[in-house]
Length: 112
Length: 116
Image (tube, rainbow over all chains, first blue to last red; front, side, top):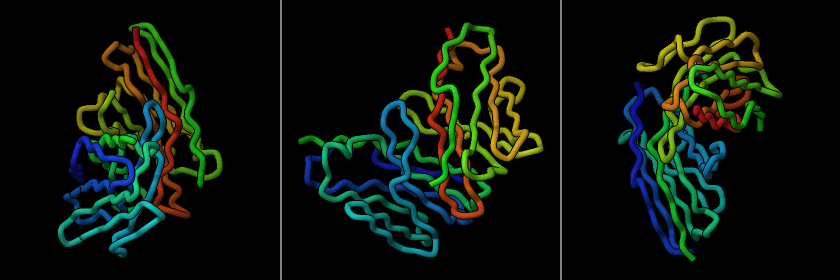
């Protein structure tokens, strides 16, 4: 089955700095790679996703890059703000009939 | 985006009793739903895949007789935790993907189960 590794497990940055979270996956059949933000006790919220036919996607301060050859993808958050503090999960899956396999999460803390 | 509603959002039950959690897709039909469990400060771990009109597929290590899943319609899947024990206390969350329109997964609000 799919195995998703996520690093780092914790990340602390100062407000305004950039944050980068990296994930690797094992199943070459995976073609969908979403990133979720989860606040305590809440459901995961999709912040950005990328499909395997795209190498990079950007949405304002958030960007995701995908290297299919190396089987890794990364989340980049620029100009971080305190409200970006949360746990971030990467995930991977084949087509829509399959479950998402999640990384272990990264606890991001943005200090003012 | 599509909406998945989960109920209840929290429940406290006594050891040995059973608890049923409902997951509904409100504006799309979900032939497949997924049930996850999340312990504090940990990731979402897939428990089972719920298929409408057929038996659920359980992940290795998940007891199918303890975690009963029923997916009787295209909009409703239920998870029943039978003979609950304190170690079953966790955050349970369902998910569905609207295969017709997008590969995005939509999550229910989650259910915080506490077994005392």
